[in-house]
Length: 327
Image (cartoon, rainbow, N blue to C red; front, side):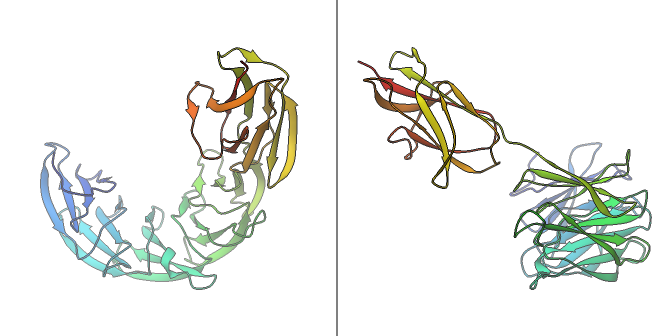
């Protein structure tokens, strides 16, 4: 099926069985779920992205994050596949969230950040108009809804957290009053919280420090923060014929300081996620260093593999082999 250039992420209309697909030609294509053919081409005034189907009223909401029409949410009727409303929100709207309890749509206006604050626009699904503009922290991302307590959790990704100068704050918006009822400091910058309906907790994770904060909706406070550890770095030595060499001195350094030492084969653990480390091995006996390979024996041609040192970012379990010419 040809749909044009730059198709975005589609959304499914469970009421009519159709699929709505944003494309780069400033349009939303409507694909029939029965025939898998395009049955409508809805021309948009700007660049559509991140569609949301409202299961309460049957409409499709289309935000624009860029172009002359950015800061607008268009509403497509699922019954007629035509635009029925134009809703002005803030700058840089993120993917939208429907609160099924009150029928409202929440729009994080990431581009509204001025200094240390942004907003969330609340659109009534009944009238397709903005009924509230809620001040939150800086850089709000896609919210999550706690369906049990009718609360909306918004990650303010540019606010300071407890582990770094660029960390995270989660604003809690009441679905009944559409106002912030709590601000929760989490471990670090997060993007989209997740609500667990089984235990009622909200999870806010981030990659910068490989941490996840667990928020209790009962207290709107962090009850625990788990740090996720990166994998280990293993260093081995072999000669030019791939015969193992044992007992060579090796060390791991970061920012110019040695943090771990050992004798090959050696595995370095307890690393900091995404930290840059330099692994160095000393030539055994009369052998001379030739190259580094990975644990699949593929030669690494990084420019930093000279003088038997190799720069490595700690992300997952990694193995490296120093190859020597031993005559």
